[in-house]
Length: 419
Image (cartoon, rainbow, N blue to C red; front, side):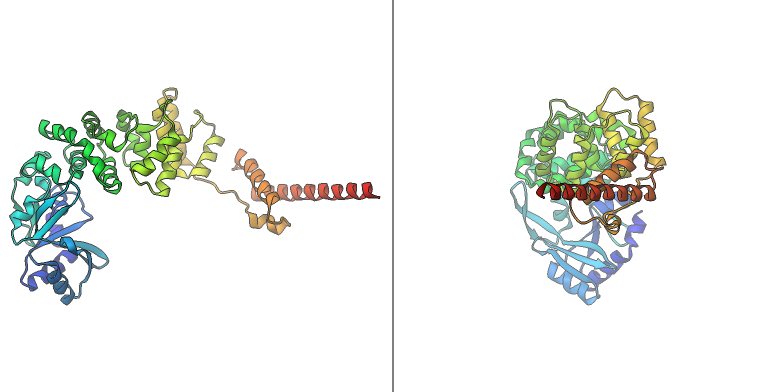
């Protein structure tokens, strides 16, 4: 995988451009770590001894587009064939406040490596594929062990987000290895300091953790040392994440799975609270709300299942079945699997008539049109496979005629009374 990384066309062009300006460039961080593990990587970062202005000039001369995304902190984004590559000048920290660091540029690769969080994140790779490992990161990666660079307490105090990164990397790389007692102690000691961070940064790390296949054991450790409560201050049941059907589901779905079903918990209030705490998008909030507040009346009939499938779509309905099953003790595993199988065999159906169809029949915009559409939908949902478009149009026509006849009757009655 390293050979694939160093042969990436964008990497080759960027390194050539920087070397053409008498600079040096190496791949660094997650892309190197993941390549060593044989994993695909989407974000490619490089480090260089050229200052940002020289990077921009060198890349510009090579015809590479640049964006000064974080130039104040030494980062320039290069865009090659529509793919972004972050290039950061070697840095050393001047001071840190637990959230951000003031930095100065340096020519020392060791100094740059020293400011990083974990040993396996301080791996550098040059264009030939040679690894530069200043803190035994390759050994820790082989052992699947999370190890801070230097003094762990000092690293945490530089940026309290590293508390969450401990658990994210434990879940993604080291879930079969225990965290050291020192790290667990320090995470517990500084758990309250997570409140000093922006909710966006917390959300980003936490969702990356939830996206990991084997996150349950890590969340248990987080819960035990008081970190999880700082992120999700609600009762949770982490054991549910062992359900194989949750593998590959979205972080929001996994979050709903560990939250749903506590009688003493106001689920709508939980949704509102998490929207603020985790800066949920409208789409994420809607999904979480659906999963937490919708109570499926198990076991569902085929008609009921089709209705939920039509209203929610296949993916959301499947998530709802999984989350609801995990929160109920009354549904058998076989019944649960039958409901899941339904989501594979059947697709959502759409009401075969619309407001435009009713307008062509003579309906005017207003309550009558809306009421008729609702009634047609109710009729269709009772048996969507049998109730055809023609059936619905005929019913709509009859309803309109009945309404018109009733209106005429009312007019005639009023006319007779006034004579």
